[in-house]
Each structure stands twice: as C-alpha cells, then as structure tokens.
Image (cartoon, rainbow, N blue to C red; front, top):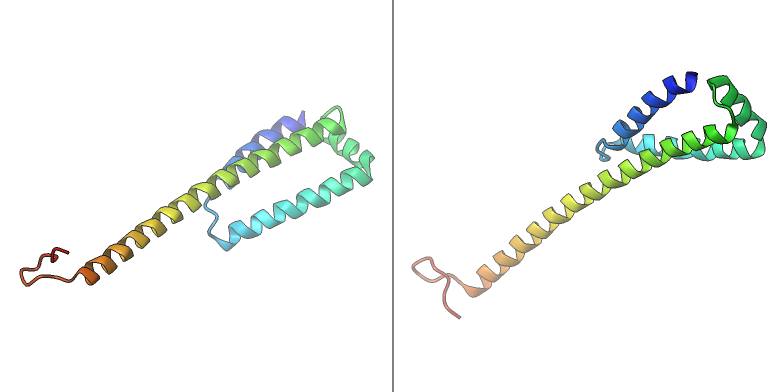
Length: 124
C-alpha cells in the first residue's frame, strides 16, 4: 500500500514543521499555505466526492472517507504542535516583559527614594 509510505513521512514532517520556531516569515507563510490548501482541498472533496475516492484508490486506501480521516489527523497533529510552540514562545516573551517591568519599577523607586551620602538608600 502506497499510503503507508506516504503517511509515515507526512507524520514526521508535520511534527517537525509544527515544532519549529514561528518568528520567521517563512514559518508564517508556511502556516498560511497549509491553511489555504486545507480549505481548498476540503471544498473540492465536498463538491466532488468522487475525486476523493479516486485519490484514495490511487494511494491504496479503501474508501475516500478513510483518506480524509488520515489527512485530517495530519492537520490536527500539525495544529497541536504549532499551538504548543506558539504558547511557549508567548510565555517566554511574557517572562521577559515582566522582568523588564520589574526592573523599571525598581529603578523608579530607587531614584525617588534618593541615595544617601554613603551610597545607601535613605530611610523613608
């Protein structure tokens, strides 16, 4: 069955691509292309269901619905991986922002309290 040889590398590629960093323009373009292809192929499979059956038979799957299930599983794997990476990146940015805010507030407090002649903060 050809589908076995197609699905295993596709799963590996979906996991690899979904776990890469999202900051690059290439990553953003890839996400948009995947989204557009998913919509177009979904629309084609609804409008022309026989096309899905022909594709399924060409790759060695019994029914077109099974092929659709395999493809949707790949899309879900990609989306879950992408969401987890995006969440981790946002969490890291939030930590950096919180640190910068804390340092800025500490500097403001330090400057408003004044510094004594011995270099220590004057008691308020």
